[in-house]
Each structure stands twice: as structure tokens, then as C-alpha cells.
Length: 300
Length: 225
Picture: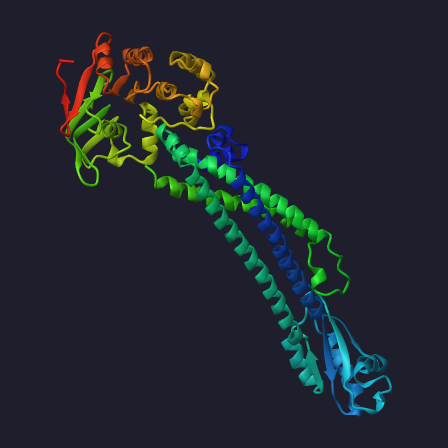
């Protein structure tokens, strides 16, 4: 029998093959519960990795879209250098706009550190130029070289220094989430294997009767495989539904709220939840199949 | 169909059977006797491939048992109906479904066979017990159900280990008659029994040969039965 045919008969269901193995209420409930609990945990691990992925993308995008030019020059040269820098920036591909900050804006930026009464005009404060990039961005190294030649007092800060560690932290968080999902999947596989082994051992008489009357291994195995696959599927479905509900009912994220309130799903992310029961069923299918084949090959 | 060529079988310490050769020809009818513990059951197990001989060759339908895969064995058991001494069933399914189980697992369950099933059950006197669960059956009823299950696939060979051990004389005659009928349809029959009366009564209906295990050897018994 081809694999495809076997898979379809698994889904459509061979009620008779299912009946040859006596029903077991207790292990059935344990398997359901464990699959459900694992699926519930998976929902949170998935939410964590999706949220941290979003966070990394957002931080990266926000900081990457703007950079700052700092012009430190003797007071009488600041105006000329600023004008020269703006001219360079305007002719740089990838720069959407460049704007010198006014004295008030600069005072506003410094106020938290020096207080509002700072006589800013009398201090040699560097002139700041805000650069907004286009989607494509500009060539940082090229711009540095041109500025060096034309505006000796300019220092370009493209925020990479700040962005990198944040992105790294978010990426690490996402990795942790994915590793957790992997571990949960492996734990489901281990648990289903144990449950399947127990069921196979408990039904050794059934198996020997079936062997005696000419049942092939795949027929016997399918009775167990179908059962555990359906249990994992339904258990994981319920666990996922409860987990999704819990996430859905979490207090909604504020606009600039912290990381924790950002935990959740957005748009297509909700559909990724549907994968949880399916993956659980696939894991159960293969775990039970290999457990059954192993057990059966040890029998005469 | 079943050929044993100079086989020996030993359990851990001692040798149970040695130098045994036998060819079960299609349509033959054999009895197998011998004192208990002489190896009748072991011999039957060698005949349907549940045991592999320690030495010598067993061929089932032209295939060497040593080269048969697990699926080959499963297919062979559809051609060889076996009645065990300790008949085992699926205890959660009624007798009717247990008897039909070989059809179920081979995917040959049809409506036509459904009426055969009814007929077969009433033949072995279990018509009224069709919906009982195996643990509710008496020893004799279990043996009759096992016989029904062994023949439902209409196998080429029927091997029976003390099929009349727990049934009364009348029922044993009826079971024998069923096996004789099957033999007349061309099936090969091998019955292990220590019931000499059964063998004697069979001789009126069928040309049966009697094999005896004694002293680890298989011998063709004389006509003195």
C-alpha cells in the first residue's frame, strides 16, 4: 500500500482497524491533557518569538531611517560649514531630507541635562543636522568621505552603534522562543512515544491474536497510530484555543508600551496558531509509527 | 504446500524433535498423536512458521521460512488456518466479529461472506452466541469459535491443536465432520489429538494418515488404531 493511501485512510478513518484495539479511557485522557498543555505553552513561546521579531524589526526600522550630523567648528565657521554640509547632503542619493536644528530645538534637547536656563548662545555647542533617509538608505562610507573633504568639522552618526545591541537582544529573544518551541515539540514526541509504548505493551495479547490471523504490521500499527494522532490533534487544538484566548484577553499594548504588553499576535500571526495542532498531530503520527514498528519487529 | 526437510528443534537445553521430514500434500488429511509434551504443539508451530527450526529446512508454499519477511508470514497465515489449544480472542469484540476478524484484517469483508459467517457460526453451534463476548464462552465454545475463525478465510491448510479437547462427543463428531467436508473441498488438514476414538471415527469418513511423535522422531503410525 502506498504511503499516500495509508495517510488518507488514516484521516478518513478505518473504523474497523480502530476497533480491534480496546479503548483505554485513562491513557487517552492523559495524552489529550499533555498535548493540550504543550500546545498552550507553544502559544506563548510562539507569541514571544513573533513579538520579539516585530520589536527587532521596529527598532531597526525606526533608528535606521534617521541619522544625525554633528558639526563642531569655531563659532564664526559654523554657519558656513552647516550650509556646506546641507549642500552635500542634498546632493547625496538616498537622503530624503536634511535639516539643521534651530537653537530652540537644540536647547530643548539639552534641557533635561542642563536645565532650561542654559545660555546656549554663549556656549560652543555643535550644530546638529537631522538626516531622514529614503527606503533604500545612503552609502554611509561614501558620505563620510565627502563630508571629510568638504566639511572638516562634521561627524556623521548613523545610529548603528545603538541599533546593533538592541537588534541582537531581540534576535536572541526570538531564538529562545524558537528553541522553546523545538523543545516542546520534542517533549510531545517523547511523551507520545511513552504513551504509545505503554498502549502497545498493554495490548500485547491483541497484537499476538492479530498476528496469528494474518494481520500485517502496518494494519496493527495503524490502529495505534490513528488513535494517538487524533488524540494529539484534538488535545493540541483545545490547548491552542485556550492559549490564544488568554493572549487575546491580555491588556492591549499601548502605543509606546514596553516589551511585555507587546506580547501577542498581529494579523497573519494568528494563523500561525493553526499550525500548532497540525504539527502536534504530525509529531504524534511519526512518534507512534516508529514506536509501533519497533515493538512489532521485536515480536514473532 | 508445507514441507519439512530433515528438521530438528531444540529448546535451550534438550532437543525436542530431530530428523523430522514431512510433506503435506494438497488435499491430504493427517492426524498427529503422541504423549503430551512430545512436541505436538511445537511441530504445528513449525508447520505455520511461528517457530524456525534449529536445523533443517521448512518450506511454506515454496518459500523457505528463514527468508520470509514479517509480511510474508502474515500472508502465509491467511492461507493456513490455525486452531490453538489455548484459543485467544479480542475480548472486547463479540464472537461474530472475532470469527470474521481474518476477513477484516485482510480487507475482504463482503456482504456475501456475511451470510457465510452466519452459516459457519450455526454450523459450529454458536449461532445463538454470536453477540456474546469471548470471556463469556465456555472452553468448548471457545474452541468452536477458534475453529470457525480458522476456516472463515477458506484457507488451503487447516492446522488444529486438540480442537476437540473440551467438547462433548457429539460436538467433536460435528467439528470433525466440518473438517472432513473442508478436506473434501480440497483443503489440507492436520489435527493434533490424543483422542484415539476421534481418529477411529474419522477413518469411516476420510482417508486419514496418522503421524506419531515418539522419541523425538515423527513416524507414520501403523494401521492398528
